[in-house]
Length: 122
Image 1 (cartoon, helix red, strand yellow):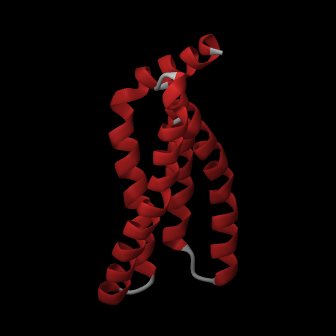
Image 2 (tube, rainbow, N blue to C red):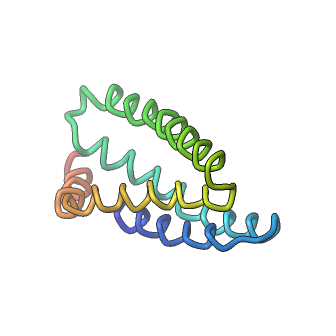
Image 3 (cartoon, one colour):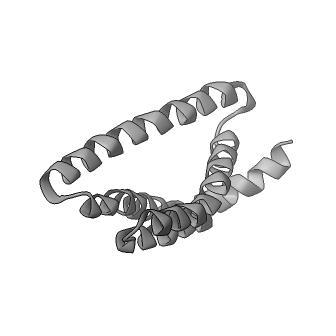
């Protein structure tokens, strides 16, 4: 989980340097390679963290959080675009990724244990 979060963070850095639509497409193409595995692993961690009777509710909260994060980041990106320009707005996703990575790192051993718990749990 943390590996894919780190990968997405690193793959967000090229967005700061794009100067054309083609370069943006290439950067986002490679950025997308980390998104699907990150989401799948997030579901796995969430599923492993709760008893079987609470899995549906837990995954519902995870799914509900995604549009909330998208909406919040869109508001912030819009404010940045209005005040500092479109190119500067590429710092918003990178900032959110760094914040998520920093917030997640203290739980590294917890995630490893949860993923191990998943295989024993079945």
